[in-house]
Image 1 (cartoon, rainbow, N blue to C red):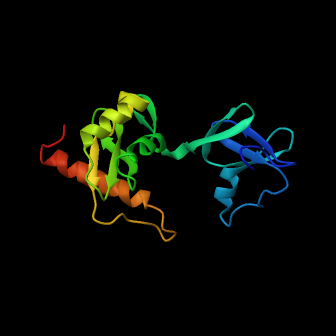
Image 2: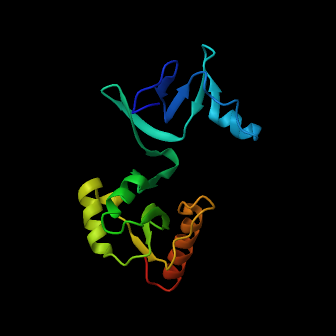
Image 3: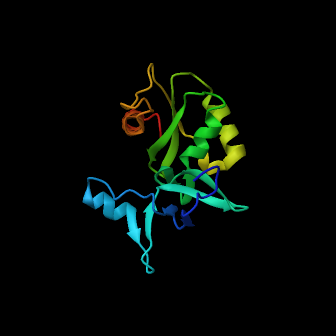
Length: 176
């Protein structure tokens, strides 16, 4: 892909995610199970790579909207954590938004940051931009943002941190 347009000999299709076909595809992963999940062959024999990204075609250009694995179901409504994070980062540029368990809604967005922004302001801004179900219910401040070996925020670790803090608040009767 280049600038939203497929390169020569590259095919693009949208299913539940962005899929790419063409001579440049890798043979697969060292993990045969992951290879079988990500590389699929259609009825015409074309081999497709499932990117794990959500997107749409707008005037013939591919627009990537985020990862399909960062969409949660909150009270029956699909919420993109990436979209919530985009809004939240206007208040806290280092913020990471992850899923938090909720007894009534299943999951809700939660904000983790090293800063101390107002949760009320964040909820109002996210609600205005993305709708009420996307409003974060939790704000967790950390002194240092945990990162992976590549320097990206460690979302798995942050998700576990938020879940444990949510469970502790619920145990202490601070959260319904």
